[in-house]
Length: 265
Image (cartoon, rainbow, N blue to C red):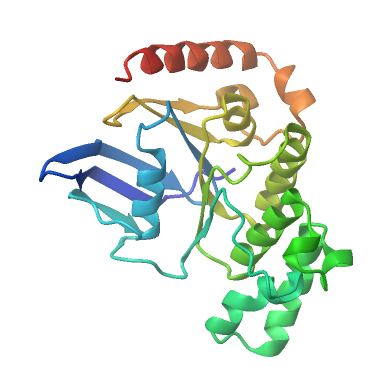
């Protein structure tokens, strides 16, 4: 983990959506926090609290109604290859092989062929799909398809990786393995990650910090620092749950989640 300067900064960000009849709905209100370089920042909270809205604002897919978002001091005004995104649904192109899917974004960005091949080889190895490089998405399991999506995003070398419940559609065993794989890649590449989840154990396992949002409209209720990890990332869940302080913070977040869920209309 890193104590470096802020990478991504949100200042007094609110987002309002128009709805039928001319009314509007406030999705998030007055959100301010920063994401530190090389950290994993997890957005957690009850359903409908605006977690995905914040991620879409960071990606430039939506624009704030008020407030500002900056990356390395530059205003975020739209999508850019300095930010990569992985969605919960599988987004591989069915007509391309695993290798060609991973290479796709680099082709669009006109990365030289030799460099493309080197990056494909590296990331296809990191996500353990070397044997399946010539396979098509229909021949892959759900976990494999999501590994392709992660490798494709990482191969583009974004400054910030944005992940919207990337393991939510997977079975429990596959999700657990994917979480450990992701931590391994994060440590290897030192990438900066913002990840949305509704799963408390997943948040505690992956996060360096957790930004906990209140029920609709989403506001920051608390930012949890993972002090019980003692400044390091824990490679396995077995080790994590045995650490002093884990049960206490899990209990506190569970209590907070129950309180916020009871406030949802």
